[in-house]
Image (cartoon, rainbow, N blue to C red; front, side, top):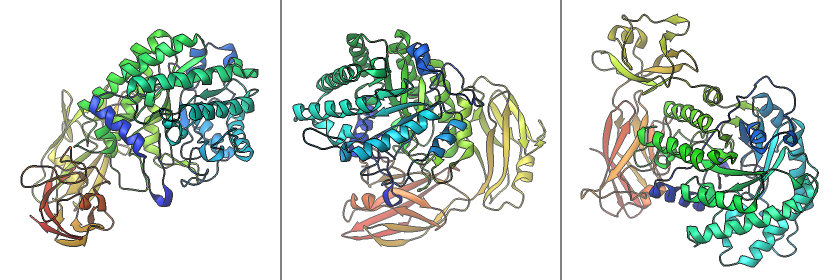
Length: 583
């Protein structure tokens, strides 16, 4: 992944990564993702078996599940520049204890390698990479080392600076191969992360990538030691799992005629859902199909031909992020990860969770959201039932009526509802008709209690296997916004949320055209154009959004909330001044 950084608590991604994702959206091509044919043994304490005695496919299967040491040795310019502490041996001890069998250690060499011949890598940095790799290997973990953000920093210039880029790339891998030639074969090399080439079309770019990979292969194989048979990972263009890119990789691998090769791709989901833009608030049928189609393509194009597949990165592009309000509603994210694990296991794909800092807290070595990681871990071996939502909203104003959710058993059997250790009574507290689960008015009256705004009670739908599905019974009223004034540097709209949660925002002009910086859709991007400030009782409009508004032309904003409530608001920019008024 490119630029998943957080300098000063900020988290952004580079233009190259976003451009690639927009191209993916436009062409409706999915990426890809997870799991192995062999279930992880979470109680395992011995080292993984050496791949010397295993076939390449079996060795790669032994790497499931995998985890990325993101935003660390790949950070720019240095290891701690993007907010993570220095890596310690204890970090890998924790990862191993949590059931991971392998780690991918992205490395950005750019700032630690001379940009001119002989392109020498700084010895101190090389020694640090070796130290970190050795810690992971000593824990019995498989390890993947790569060339990471170099892909867009200087390798992308290959179309206009071919000879220098190839010379630098070759020099880099000659030094890395020499440093690790005697490391065990549980260390794998990945030629380049998310390869991309500036101002080059797919055909030309695939040719450049083939040239780099062929050179990488020859250098590593010719360097002796364990490199002669070390497993080598080759990416598709952009690490995209589109059929054209995978077909090109298959052709390349066949031409190399080497049994110890592994294909690698990435998957971050259907773009509108992954970042919450264009109304992509839910893991809906479109997002689900993108995922299932992607894995079907990987299975049919790569796995069916006996090519081991390591999905080097997966997740959602803007979730989780503990430094900002959640763009993706948590229940929808849980459904995404639940299906992801199933699709990957079915396809026989090994997966590496991209973790820049948001899953595992590197300071405490504890998961930031234990329930989220529990869902991910469960998906490695089993399916879990879910529902159409993880919230039931009950209005504070007015009579309480029955509420219905749609269950998604995912091959399991619904067993009932519980509140803590108490089982709710079928017929009295809830009814089930097909997959429709209805909570009765009487049950909701009891569960909401004094009907204070917010979550009043948590119940669980339990199934025959997998994890229970939590349902938050929530009291709300339609949020109330107030007039506001500000500047193009930002507008804070006083808001009484009254128990509700923001889902998305539409922005249009009176003529029906779209307002804001995301002109191809009326539904603007969460946190990029707007953001809720729940503790501060405000809705925030960003400088980027306000700066993109037409001067002197009122824009109508429609805020959509998870209860189903909508509130309209009008914003007018006049020079650097901004005025907001209730409709």
